[in-house]
Image (cartoon, rainbow, N blue to C red; front, side):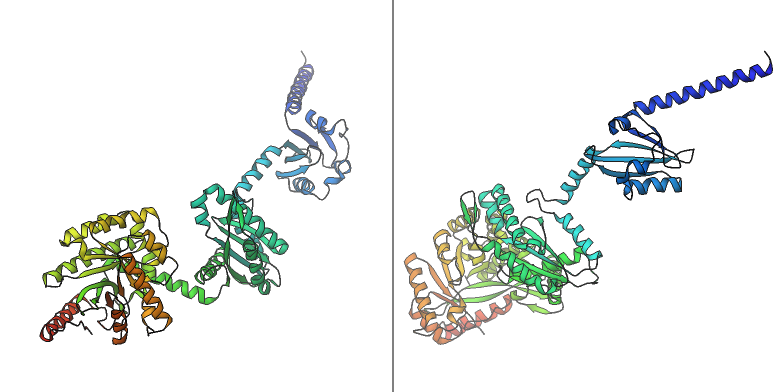
Length: 575
């Protein structure tokens, strides 16, 4: 075979191999489930596979100019991606909606060796739908279909980036927890949906409503006049909740809400987190004012919040380092002035501010995680002190106030039993004092331990009687042995006054129920005489002594007893 013949044969073999490779490539492109296009550098279509031809429903595209065949794509995302690949010779990917398939297509575009491009397109409608569902789950509240906390965050961040003035209205439903606890979470969800509908209708086009979680909703308002109108808008949407009761599963539920408003002016350096935190402080102020009102955030709210936080931190330190102590105020029998008891009152020996009374810290302590432990310490310390005074010859009854958490915890009986046993003190020497905030709750789990303690001989006193709505209900349900008339009725106690009539009524009621009575806040001889003449058993107040530390109390009690013995007139006077 000549050399020329050999070269010809080799050329034929190469051509056949190239043809086979082209056929394999074409077969692969024809069999793929995606649409494959080949476009030359003049934007004419040179190839389209079978799936693409089927997609075109018989339209002949090969040899046609792409943008003349599809003018609707010009200027859109596909146009941008194809032109970018053609000029930059770097791959790109674009997703776009296609009316023909009624869904979304994804095109992966690559530069080809002939200066054109090749694109592989596939239907991604299901993937896009799944992504949208995931986004909905991430940004939409499942109960109300409103945007959720993350959705609110994104909307607010976008509004801030645009530099427009905006306001945030944060509100919650007063009493929602009671609905959940009483009627179940299903009823609670129905209430949330109905509330969301009313709020959204009242808000209208003035803003966007979201649910942060629980019973908290938030409205995002934007616009040049938002600063002046935010309060008005907040009151309008709050009114939509209280204008008529909710009917949930046959139950009529009157619901009101409180709202906190914060306004961000154009260009203000802030963020969604700070806005929401400030709105929350304003909401706190609204609820502290009694609820059902709107409060707008001011710098004072932030200062008060920081002061509360500092106090919370200091109270925690005080509980852990033992800075609390007990002082004792005498209680006397009005018939003869004999010292018969004392009330244990907590004080805080602050390392910088000195001795602090409960008004400075008690509310914070009661709401802290240390309330139960400090409450148990008070009972134990009071019992120990009562036992020590007994050894000194003073068999006094000692009253201690309870924190609500001590009843909720479920171990009150064990705590009291342990304190009495440790001090070797009879149960009759201890009296538990309940305030109205405890009596209002009236849960059976709270009443049971009190009944057990009363059966053991521990006294149960109802403090500040007559000042609130729970008083008469408490007399019916709580195992009360003594009423303490609040000092507010004693302060202006004169014959013929309204206060005198109330005191007389309380004394009559107590006698009919077989309860003893002690009057607080006695300061004058006239007050003492009036109470004694109307059958009040005991008294407590500055007339007999201010709260004192244990040493001072014992010294004063001993001096008073000695003086009484010399005079044979045991009138208690400790000053």
